[in-house]
Image (cartoon, rainbow, N blue to C red; front, side, top):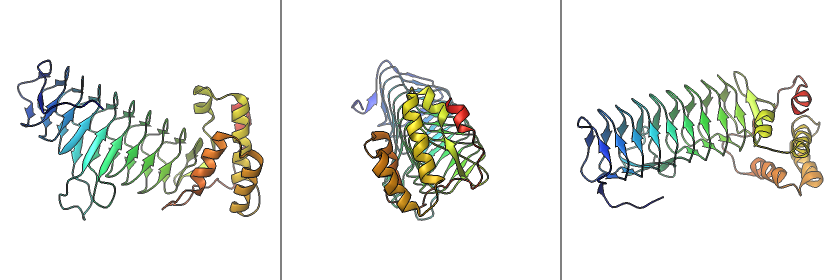
Length: 283
C-alpha cells in the first residue's frame, strides 16, 4: 500500500456536507460525497470514492480505487461484549467495491485486532463482515450474506445471497456457497456447499472452468473428492490414500493442507445421497 502523509491531497474532491476529521489522510483523486463521515485515523489511498452517506469510523485503511456506496459503514466497533474500546482496525484492498448498507466491523482483542478484505472483492448490499474476518482477493459476497467473527475466506470464493457463516469457519480457495445456506463447518478448496445446514454437493465445476482449469486437472479433483468424501472407511485413511495416489499434484496438496490444518469448526461433509450430476457438468 502507498504511504501518505496525514492531510488532504489538493486533488481530492470533498462535498461541503461531508465531515472529515482533522488528521485523516485523503489521497490524490479521492471523492468524498454528501453527508459522509471520515475519522481522524482513516487513510484513503488514491482515487477512493465514497459516494454519499458513508461512515468511516476508527482506524480504517481503504486501498486505491475502493468504492463505497451509500449508507455503508466501515470500522464501527465489533459486536463483541468483551470489546472495551481497544485500538483495532480495518483494512480494505485496492479496487474493492462495497455496496449499499454493507457493514464491516473493526477487529477485536480476542482475534488479531484487524478485519481484512482483500483486493478486487465485491461486497453486495447489506452484507455483514464481522470482527476479525479475513477475506482474500476476488471474493464475492452476494446480498445479505452474514459473516460471524473470525471467518476466513480464501481467493475467488463466491458466497450466495442470504448465506450465514458461523464464527471461525474457513472457506477454501475457489469454493462456492449456495444462497440461504448456513455454514457451520469448513469448506474445502474448490468445493460447493448448499442446504439449510451446509453439506458438500460436489465441486465448483463452473468456477473451475471459468478460471481456466484444464479438464485433466478437473478430473483429478473429481477423483480426489470422491476418494475423500464418498469412499468407505475411516476419513484419515482416505486422506492418506489420496496423498499416496495424487500427492504430487500441487492443487491436491492444497486440499490436503486445508484438511489437515487446525480448525475450530471441523470439515463440512458430503450429503449421504447426492445425485451424480457432476460428470455431466465436467463434460
